[in-house]
Length: 117
Image 1 (cartoon, rainbow, N blue to C red):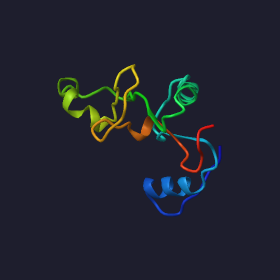
Image 2 (image 1 turned 180 degrees about the vertical axis):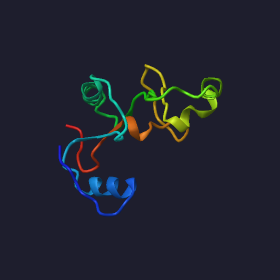
Image 3 (image 1 turned 180 degrees about the horizontal axis):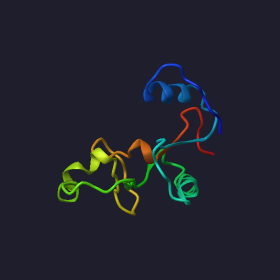
Image 4 (image 1 turned 60 degrees about the vertical axis):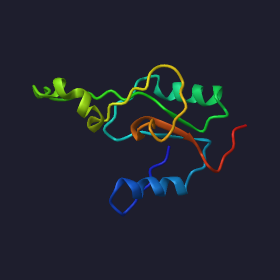
């Protein structure tokens, strides 16, 4: 793991700086406010090994609130879940398309510079 300092503010600048310096086979993406499951890394690596023909993977994101939720939130959850980053496309593998994409807080892809062995 390496730390890269990017003087320009903004997540896109940081991600672009990272992509320019890739030297591994797999790139795992998450956010600084995400708490990952203890099996997160091993599960992604296992999926990448099992599905060498695939180049992009995603997993569930379950929001966790540090303060009590407002009373309106649960009744409106279906409409607002995406704003809070929730994402769960189920347990079975599926093919991503323009309608169903993983969110950046739980995604992995093969480095474009590397080909699966």
